[in-house]
Image (cartoon, rainbow, N blue to C red; front, top):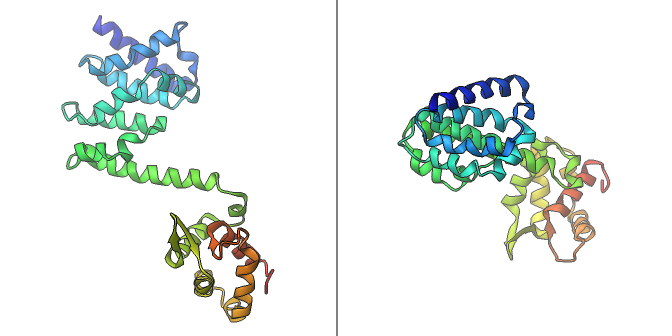
Length: 237
């Protein structure tokens, strides 16, 4: 029986890799998919079951079915269990990443249990990829005003904004007193040597009064981006 399951897994793996669609699923697809995680724990089939899982995770139309059938829990259990072969744990880790399931990474469980071995090195690499993906998603879902800036500009402006901002009630914002040095730093970051000469106290006060749309007496991140957008277009200069 184990040899039949192993052969089925290997055959399905090759079909998935070549087709990259859910056409590989048999008529009773839920039964077939639900059986795959149970094969993770059997020595005779675990390697093939994991490789098939990783291949299926790359087929967008199958991902939701895999999540619904709880592939995630067994995969996480393999990643953090040193009794499993390192190669299998790494395949399980890649499958979770491909499925978009990052909890075992972001919660620190993978780092705690894999630190110091070859899997730990892969966990560190995956964490970098997770952060990169999150930044990319955040950039793609940015508010309309952020579309006026490049990704590098936004990151640099955010870094400078956070340096100058004061936090109140969990939200960072810029006071009128800090707006002048903030704008000078932003101009320096973009090699703009002309604008700082025009940033008089009167102009800075006018900017703060105009863009403080909620009358909080401070400039929040969104308001600051509107300031930068208009300054770049020469609106106040």
